[in-house]
Image (cartoon, rainbow, N blue to C red; front, side, top):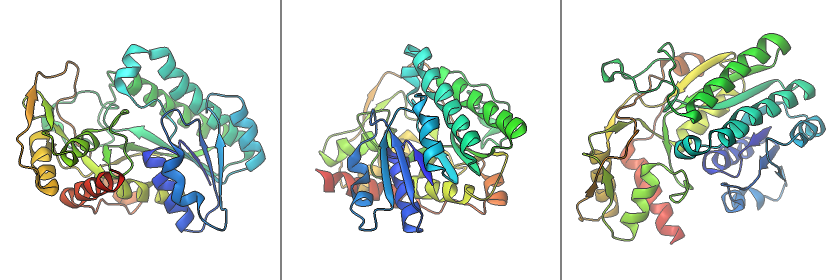
Length: 313
C-alpha cells in the first residue's frame, strides 16, 4: 500500500489503520504541511512495515518511486488543501492538485497498481447549492467556485480518463468537513481544531458571521474506514463521505464548550466573504457500494479532539 500525504492529519490516521490490518505501507510526503510527529506511533513499530519517502508528488521521481515499490493500492491524499491559498495562488494549487495527481496516475499505470483511491472534496465540488437540495447526492451538478474545487474536479476527470484509456481502476471519496485528533489548528484546519485550541486555553471561540452557517462534520476514523473499504470496493465511482446532517457553527461551539468545561460565550466577528453558507452530503452511495456509514457522534468526536489537544499541551 502507498499513501501520499501520509504524514498529514487524515493520511497518518489511514496509515495507522493499514498497519493495524497487517499491510506494509509506503508513505510519500514532502512535509510541507504534514509532520513526522503524526507518524510517531507508526514508526515505532518493531516490524518496520512502514517506509517513509520525503518527496513532492509533483516531481517526476514520483513515477520512478512507484515503479520501484510497485504498490497494489495507492491512496492519494497529498494536496494543496487551503481554499484561500487556491484563490491567491491558483497556478500553485493546480500544480499540486492536478499535476500531482497526474504523476500518481502515471505511476499507477507504469507500475501496474490495482487501484487509486482519491481524496476529493465534498465541500467545494458542488459549489454553493440551494439549501433545499441538502444533503447533496453525487448526481447533484458539480459547479466548484474556488480554484481548489476546480482542480479536484479536474483530477476526478483524469481518474475517469485513465480508467478508460489505461484500465487504472479508481474510487473517489468526496469528503465532508473532516475533523479529529492531529488536525493542525494553524494550517488549513477546520473549525473544530481551531475551537479546541482556544477552549483548552480557556479562551472564547470566535465565530465569523451569525453562526447559523452549517457544515457536515465527519470524524476522521469514520473517514479512514471509508478509505480502507474503497481499496477493494466501489470501483469507478465518486462517493460522498459525510453524515448527511447539518450542524450550525453556533451549535458546534456549544457542544465543544460543554465538552471542554468552558463557560465563556463566543465572540462574533463580521462574516468572511466567499464562505460557503450551508453544506451536507448524502452518503447513500457509499453505504451501498462500500458498506460504509458514519458511527461517531459529534459529542464523542469533539471530546476526543479536546482530549488530544490537552494531552499535547
